Image 1 (cartoon, rainbow, N blue to C red):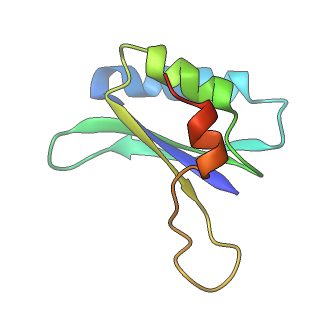
Image 2 (cartoon, helix red, strand yellow):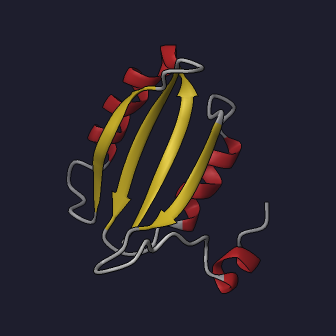
Length: 97
């Protein structure tokens, strides 16, 4: 299971969250698990969760989207331990923008 934490300017966040709700409405493998505003810089954020690995085409879309301030991908632990990881090396090597 992997999550993507996406940061947007606050004024874009709600529109983007609604867009993701529509885009993934029929996809049981992807869910919006959180959205809101950061405290310090008041940036909007959205957290999407995939049942398995995040689709690389989705990450390419984020890279190309000028409204995306930043994003990170992390694995969600399915047991004990933190489970904080980056993209597996074979994924990262195929995903070089």
